[in-house]
Amino acid sequence: GVQVQGANQFGKSKAFAQNISKFFFALAVLCATPWLNLVGNTLIWLAVILASVSVGIRALPNKVQSSIQATIPQILTLCNLGGGLLAIWYATQGQLILAVACNFAAMIFDLIDGAVARRLGVSSSFGKQFDTIADMISFGLAPAIMVNAKIGWTPLSMTLGGLYVIATLFRLYDYSRSKDKTPSGFFRGLPSPAGAWLVIGSILFPPISICLITLVVASILMCSFSINWIHFNRVFNCMYPSEIIGSLVIGLVLSLLTKTPATLFAGPIIIYVFSPAWRKPSHT
Image (tube, rainbow, N blue to C red; front, top):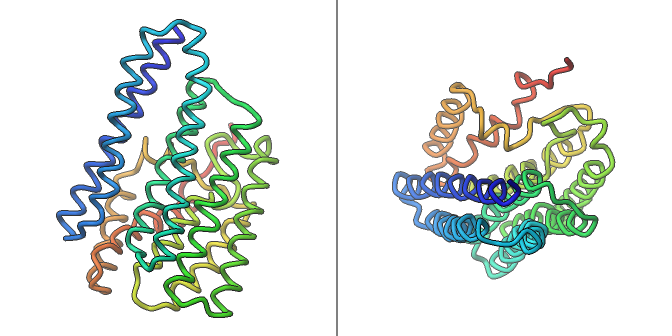
C-alpha cells in the first residue's frame, strides 16, 4: 500500500518532469534560444532519477521506505537551493541567461518537492525551515541580485532589490503562519516563486526601467494578503483553454515587440498575476 503509493507518486512526478522538458525543448527550437535546452536537460535528468526511484521503491522494506520518503522531499529542496545559488553565481559572472535558466529550474524543483511531500504524507520541522531558506535564496535573494547584475548595482536598484528581498521574507513568514486562514488550494498574496518569475522575466526585456518597476510591483503583490492566487499545481492540472491561448498570445506579442524570443516566458506569469479576477476560492 504505502510502497505502491510512493512509487506511483514518483512515477507521476517523473511524467510531469518529462512533459515540462518537452515544452522547453520545443521553445528552444521555435524561439531559436539554445539556453532553454539547459532547463530541458535538467528536467530529463530529474525524470531519470524519479523513474529509478519509482522502480526501486517497490522492492524496499517498509522501514527503508519510510526513511527514503522522509529524505526525498529534502533532496528536491536541496536542488531548489542549488538552482538559486547557481543563479546567483552566474549573475555575478555576467551570464544572466544561464542565471535565468537556473532560477526556472529552482522553481520546478520547488513545485515538485511540495507535491511529493504532500502525497507521501511526510512532514518535519526541519523540512519546513529548510524549504523556507531555499525559497528565500532562490526566489528572494537571487532575483534581486540578477536585476542588480543587469543594471549595474546602482543605489536605486540596490534599494528596490532590498525592498523586494524584505517583501519575500514577509511573504514566506505569512505563508508559514496563516495556512489556516488561506482557502484550500490557494495562496494569500502572490507566491514567492511567481514573484521571482515576474522579476527574472523582466530581465529578458531590454529596457532596464522594466526591471525596477517589476521589483516594486512584485513586492506589492507578494504582500497583498487580501488577494488569493490559485496554487501552481492546480493551475498546471486544470488550465483553462483561454489561459493557454492568452499566455501564448501575450508571449508572442512581447517577443515580436522586443525582438527577444525568450520574452515568450512572460506570457504565462502575466496571465497568472491577473488570474484572481476569474479564479476565486470556493466558500462552500
